[in-house]
Length: 345
Image (cartoon, rainbow, N blue to C red):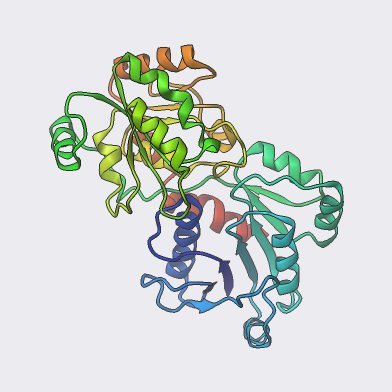
């Protein structure tokens, strides 16, 4: 039996870390109904969720008694704040009540630790840590942790490609520019996402659409400024967000700060699953898993951004969805990484 501690899988599941936590928890439940998920919040698609204690250290006699009675083989913790020192401490506290269970913590976003924190993490380390990039492997191996490198998965049934006629229909439905060359970004509306850096695209005939997360507050000052420049913002919850990918021409990921996005951004995979060309900075797990192709380009500055954007539009038929289907669907990721790696531990 496996226990998954997934702090936030509440509805709507519309943010990268939440999507990852929910998808992984659901895969484990689908694999074996005896596996258990603990979370702070309910989710109607996982009706048998049990609840985490609502305190900093997860201290609760009834919670400890419950997990001790189960005696799981693995205890997997997906902290929403990623691998802060407090996340490692919580993992250690819970592990004391799990008998011989092998404890695994998941690092979804890069975190920095001071010298004393590193010493403590090395001392209370879990059995293993799941990381999303080679740079994270190097960081945690220096602390003496056993690292398992794994990509993120994407729902390839929801995020699919459409033909040009359907693309035009979606633009009309979503009130997007019919004839414009639409560049899309999905993520938090704040300076850390570096979305103001792509303004130059506007003066070269591109339309910029940004879809913000409902999980975090937007930087309204930045939003108002960029709206005046010509950006189109969508800030409401969108159940069928795949339609915005399908209506666009290019997906751009301009983030540079390692702490401003998941180490392997899920939005890039969603866009690729919809067969969109990708224009991105050299970021985290993206670099670990993807090389440049006619449909996938890296850029470092404005000049490269414009050059590569035009090359993407001029390229032959995009084949990014084929790449996703081969290696990055949730079925592939779960079978080839999670199930396989756990069996080897």
